[in-house]
Image (cartoon, rainbow, N blue to C red):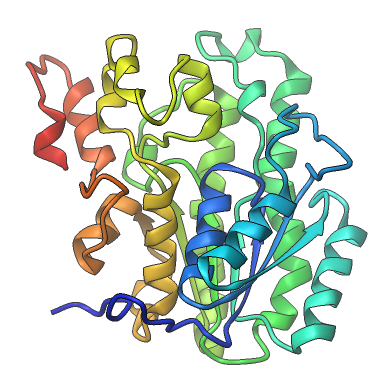
Length: 313
């Protein structure tokens, strides 16, 4: 039997200190909330607050709300506004964590917010250069700044966990993601993890990359013009949406990993929510356990016939 997060109602992350960088919405928000549900103290960062809206332009999703959701779930949520492209702001966040707790046990590097920049259907020589470079800033430079500022605190104690959040596994990203800048941006965290694993392993810490499947984020629901209660109506437009998962699913994947005392066995690995669900036995909000990447591969394979998403849940 594989290690699990404990019995219902258990709080294995009580006393653990986490920083979820990029927790305004989507996967980052639910990763923070699910860490809180297991008793963790979770510092959440992002650019959208109740006083200021980021370039993403979604004013109703704020880090203050995320922190409140963490606390309501049973943890302690702390909202810390920060633009992770500004090293001074990131250092201020880490300094706050150090002053308050003197340690950092879990670092989730989920900086992104670049969906509005992606141009699919264009060749490399047709892409908007400014949009492409902004994606690289958000998805690579922001991650590197966060790591450099936070790792000195995390490595003070053995057992620390670093999670690089991306879109796709090492295997699924072997194919081309349809936009040169996006492809590079989303493969970079996987490669970062390999380097981090080599350097963190000898000091007793662990690094992994983690991806959701077809994420039913707030942005994605709006994109397809559906809500969480009627999301299946979008399948007619996008067949792959049949395997869609809620952000809670990848949040539970992260929490299960963080609570696993034997998590170092994953060091350097590229992991997905569907893969970890098979190991840790958690489910999505509807009781299913969608394994998106094998389904999408089967659906898009040359000569593929009808593929039933239920076979992958």
